[in-house]
Image 1: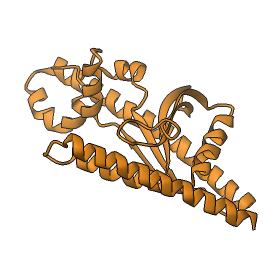
Image 2: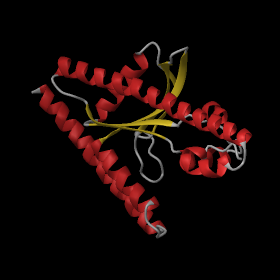
Image 3: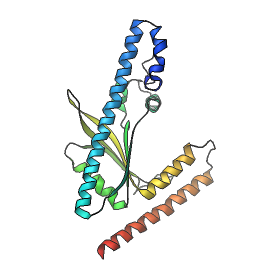
Image 4: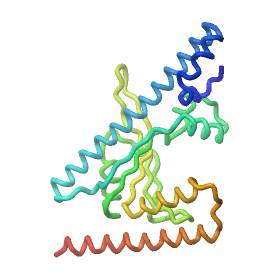
Length: 230
C-alpha cells in the first residue's frame, strides 16, 4: 500500500482491495485517509478565514466610499493529483506532512476587482492585519509575464484555530481586474484545455491581446479617477 496522497482521489473505491490485504493494511489505509481529510479541512478553513476577512474589507470599503472594490471571489484546494504531481516534480516525499512543509499553494483564492487601484488597496489592507503574515509577493501587473499574464500574487500565512491548537496555513491569493481575469481565463483554456499545440505566432497574438486589454484597463482607471474628481 502506497503512502501517496492518491488516496484522496481513489477514496473509498480502494476499500474492497484493502480489506483483502488484512487488518494492518486496513488500519494504514484508514489512517492515511483520515490524514487527507484533515489536510483538506485545514486548508479549507484557512481559505474561509481569508474569504471572511475579504468580505469584511469589501463592506467596510462600501461604507466609506459607497462602492465595493471586489467583483468576485473564487477559491480552491489543490486536488490530490496536483499535490502529488508537484511533490514529484520537486523530488520530495509523497505524504501529507511533506505537502504541508513544502507547498505554499495548496489553498488558493482568486479575487477580481473593478480597477487596478483596487488591487493594491486590497493587498495593503490584507497585509495590515496583525495576524496575517506576508510570505511572498509577485507583481505581474508592473512586471507582466512574457505571455502577457497580469495579476498580483501574494502568499499569506493565516491563522487557523483548530479544536486543540492554533496553526498557520499559507494561502495563495491572486488579485486581478475583471479585464485581466478575462484574458487569463481564455488564455488558459486555449493553452491547456485544447489538444493542439499553440504556435509561436498564436502565442504572440495572445500577448498582443493582453497588451490591448491592459491599455483598456488603464483607460478605465483614468475615467474612474476623472469621474471621482467631478
